[in-house]
Image 1 (spheres, rainbow, N blue to C red):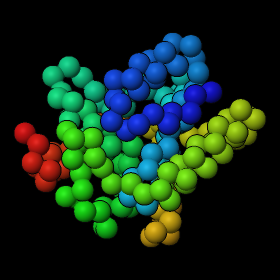
Image 2 (cartoon, rainbow, N blue to C red; image 1 turned 180 degrees about the vertical axis):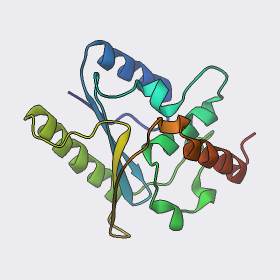
Image 3 (cartoon, rainbow, N blue to C red; image 1 turned 90 degrees about the horizontal axis):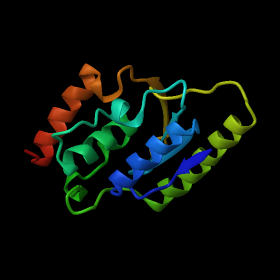
Length: 168
């Protein structure tokens, strides 16, 4: 079992970790703090697409575009957009909005999911499924994003966010 707690902006190290975990047939659990929320994903070696495929990472993307796609794929239906200050995002400078509360929530959600997987409990929902909880808004969202960031809705969100953040 791998619990991904790598810094958001250490993207290439994360990609290498996911490739190696998949090669060794080890599941990876990630919970990301976004605003006051936590978004949980499970990458299963047999039941999930590879990291780069789900996040639609391919040659020709800038480092900032990779980070934006990563954030979009982590939170396909984000709750935090209603209260997020877009001025607090600086992907090139390694700055994004999250709270200590969300970091604690992430560790609890990721650890609990790892325990469920290790014990073989029913209900495994690997990528392209996701779970997001925002205690600030008292919202739980569970869903499925077929195709990950290759999904037409995700492509549209990517274009809108690039424009809103002034990314060429």
